[in-house]
Image (cartoon, rainbow, N blue to C red; front, side):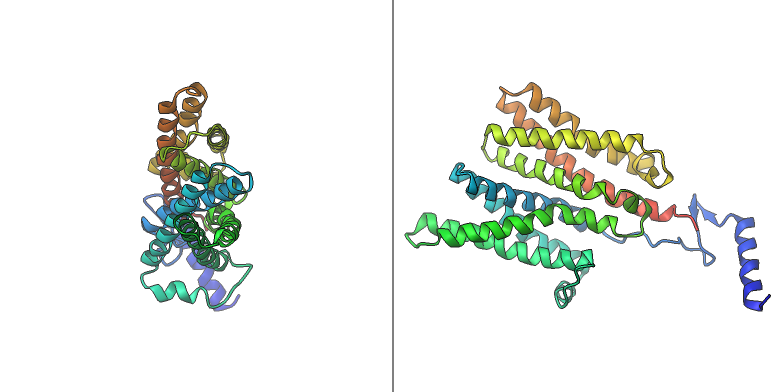
Length: 307
C-alpha cells in the first residue's frame, strides 16, 4: 500500500474513533462541515418573497388584460409587479455586496445555470414590468397612443414573471444541500403557489374583491395545505430540518399561515369581505415566513450532512 493511502486509512480510523462531531454536526478531517452552509442573510428570502409575488402579479395582470377584466385591476397588478421588480434588484445587490457582481452575472447567459437564468430573468422582468406600468400611466393621463406598448410589455412581463415566481425553487433544488435537493420537484410548485397567493392577497388588500381572485386564493391555500401534509409525512433524514428544531417550528408556522388559516377564512367567509382580507394578510405572512424557513432549513441541513 502506498504511503498516501496508508495515511488516508489512518485518518479514516481516527475520524471513526472520535466521531468527528461537534454539537451533532458531522465534520470532515479538517474539522469543518462537509457542506458549506449558505451564507445568505435576510435579503435573499425577502427577495424570494418579493420577486415571487411580483412575478405572479404580472401574470394576473396579463390574464386580466386578455380577458377584458377591470382595467383598475390590470393597473394595480402591473404596479405590484413593477414595485416588486424595483425592490428585487437592490435586495440582490445588497446580498452580493457590490452592484458590479450582479452585472457580471449578465455577461454570459448559461441555460444550464439556474443562477445565470435567474439573473437574466430579473433584468428582463424588471424592464418589462416597469415599461408596462409607466406606459399604462401615460395612456391614462395623456392622449398618446401607447396602449399597444403597455399591453406588449405586460405580456413580456407575464412571461418572465412566471419564471420569477418559480425559478427560486429551481435554484434551491439545483444545489447539493440535502433538504433542498431532496425536494427539487416540489420547490418550484410550492414557491409558485405561494407567490400566487401573495399576489392575490395584495390585490385584495388594495380593494379588489373579485370572486375570481378569491377562487385563486382558495386554490393556492389548498395547494399549500397539501404541501404541509406532504412535508409532515416525509420520514427521510434529509427532511429532518423541516420537522425538528427551530427550523421545523418555522416551517410549520409558515405552512399554517399559508394554507389552513386562509383556506378556512376564504371558505367560511365567502360572504364576508373582512374574512377575505384577514385571509389575505395571513397568506402574506405565511409566504414570507416560508421563504425564511426554507433558507434556514438549508443552513441546518448543510451542517448535518454526512460524509
